[in-house]
Length: 227
Ligand code: NI
Image (cartoon, rainbow, N blue to C red):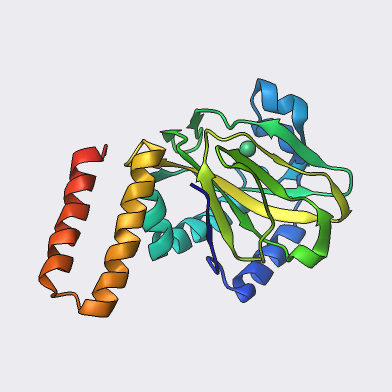
């Protein structure tokens, strides 16, 4: 399941992020890559353990955990500290799958990566190329969103970032461990929740069938959740 979530950050917040990010030094993006992705990754990133990366990352995590669509779609158990990258002209990230497990040396957090997310921090007209291409059973999908918007996709999918041919592509990316490990189960839970919200809107929250379905929703989570 691939989900685009608009306006995770406001345009003013994005501008503030960009101003702070422009004022510091960046490093080679291969410092966090695994053996295979190291060969195909060509970009720059904010040093992951730096004060700025952690501070901005915390702001993103706080925006995500208060975003109902994000919470409903991911049912997060852990969110790995977000990372920040920049692709200049000629830079790209070839086809790869993200590492299955990520450990954070600063906090000791270790997660299974069920979901990956990219939060766009530049407008599409700031650069050419730089599309995130995600493959699933339905083919490959090109994603390039407005600044402040986020795309969520299963970490198990092959994906790449195409070469930037003009300007620079600035983004944050992160991994989540979901309480619902199985992508298929998580998709059904999300569909059910979305339908229940629409039903409640139409019939009221006290409609007996809406109440019963809300119970089914929670009982499915109770059945599947790993905490
Ligand atoms: Ni990746």
